[in-house]
Length: 184
Image 1 (cartoon, rainbow, N blue to C red):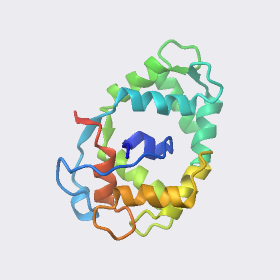
Image 2: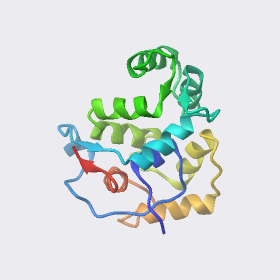
Image 3: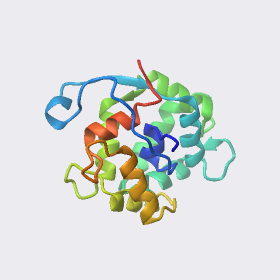
Image 4: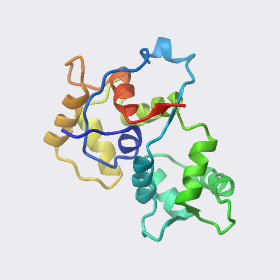
């Protein structure tokens, strides 16, 4: 079975999952609050994320494309936030974010922070019970325009579910998400 990384899962870009051994301590809610570790994202994963945002495949992310994807993920009222992001990221002033600018923002922002991982987990944990079910994976991927059968989603969850309870908890999610990243 192939592997999935943080950005794949966060943005629903792939149906590939595989657990990986932990490199560091647990991130359950009691231990997580004081941790501010960051990870360098994998460039190939970043390219897949960029391509997901770039709906018209012109090599640039527009304000409209950025808003559209965030809204599909269930984030309301993103227009101002996206305008600020583009203002910061658009280094050449053309009103768009190209891949180089996209990567520069990731590098300058310190990479993927543990808070980003937690936020991604919470985005998939639709009922807020601290666990991600196959149904929740399917729902979020559907919002992103990715088809995934119930059986495929069950296989994804099983591929990450280290404790065998049928769900993905925060520790399992963190282990999966950081497999292709190195600490920064």
